Image 1 (cartoon, rainbow, N blue to C red):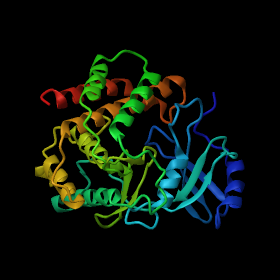
Image 2 (cartoon, rainbow, N blue to C red; image 1 turned 45 degrees about the vertical axis):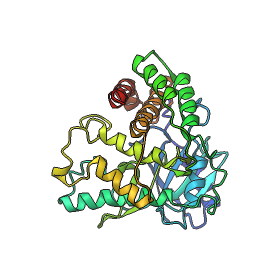
Image 3 (cartoon, rainbow, N blue to C red; image 1 turned 135 degrees about the vertical axis):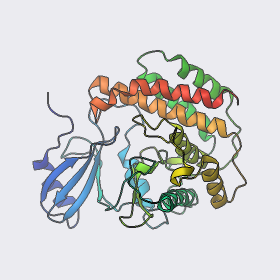
Image 4 (cartoon, helix red, strand yellow; image 1 turned 90 degrees about the vertical axis):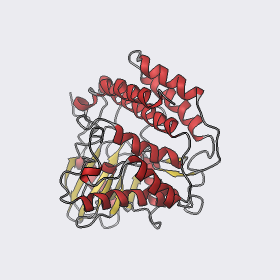
Length: 343
């Protein structure tokens, strides 16, 4: 059985030389081990280093793995305060490798995989890294999406209603067994949908520490990655999703901040982090916070179920890791239940 992650270098190299100005002589490809959605590769060439991101092979869920949307949003943000890599080429038909892909610049810097930042020596620098992440999120939500050509990047209004419908459908399409806590969570979210307040911004959809690159020598975000879930939506979805990540147990594949004494290592509490975001966004606070957290748990659980289903179907980017996501669905829906039990 052939490796679904191996690309045809003999076909790809000449294609990139024809299609990307300045690209010269492909010398190697190395797949990044992280990530479960769109296979991503470090591209080495005589002209420098690049990153290639492709759709996975096989039968895919509707509206999933839209690498062309990733390319479009990052290309639109290139002249804004939001740091993104330079987009170099989008191959719509994916002729040289058999599926759609894009090529972008390789950004040098640090990626922090553990939100507790054990590799950072001082509490002051840890605090500065989180503050930079907070400021960058506020900057993203402040972008005039109409002015940068993203006015049709999503449907404005009723974001949580539409997203709940979309991810419920995605979950049902990839469901492999009944998870009672997941069914109960979906029912609670449907019952407690907040009224639409008309607020619309560009949202990342997967805003977390390990989806950004920091400068090698200072606490500055130099690139935000993985825009697959980006759309026009509600900014509370991003801030709640990030805080949801921190509630996950630290000693799991999610590497959350659950059980970590944040103050002792210089990290802000959830309340302080949200307050800093609200100050930067110019708002007094966020009502219905338990709903937004619960929605974040639900959506991540639906994503994990899709990853697990792709593993069973043989289409996962990292199949061995993907098969562990079955337990993740139960964990996430349980934690959501704990979040809303007193709401």
